[in-house]
Length: 295
Image (cartoon, rainbow, N blue to C red; front, side, top):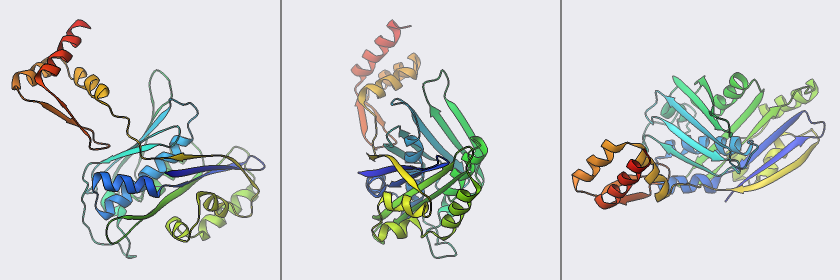
């Protein structure tokens, strides 16, 4: 299980969310069999989206973050509920490219630097909120920071990290998001800026045994903070045969009839958890009958 914690400054001028997501990214890697660089890229996005989900207010709210850029891994998508439970998908699971100039996994090279980041929030309104900003780095953390500043006009700092072992297993994963609230004093901003500039990498802290609480306190060192809450979270897909049936019905009468006419089972795979659902021609006919009755 992952863990998310949230703290606020005692003067109410800023808050931080920190996440330890090693188990989440591990499950994703084992499920999707991603290459090392893709594990790092999607793992970062899963971590950020989990924290963004935890910022939502209502139990039925959800957030989807999608990156569509010009890198070889293609689209990356992560979806979180309000508890930080998250699931993800990447268009190309295997991307083999050289290490970057610092000898680390080249996430930017895999994701790309030309494209868009989309944030879709389903918060119970008639239409979902959709924010869209250009990709500015492809490293994901910087792109999330830019989204908050540009689309939500909220000064923020996002740090993310995923460390992958030589056998492709996940050593550690996590991150934090700091956001300034209206009226934040310049002295608090100065301390946060200094901390962010000198804090160890997220994966270094996790490898040294830091917890999510430790990361939050380190990032806010020198500022009085109070803990608001904490929660465990996991990689969680909400697919089911019933949901797939609804999706098949939405394809339309003609599409369903074509499936029946083929005389073969129709198989649907969930992109988020790779689970497959199979429907016989008779089952598809029952869906067709249901669709016709509701027209």
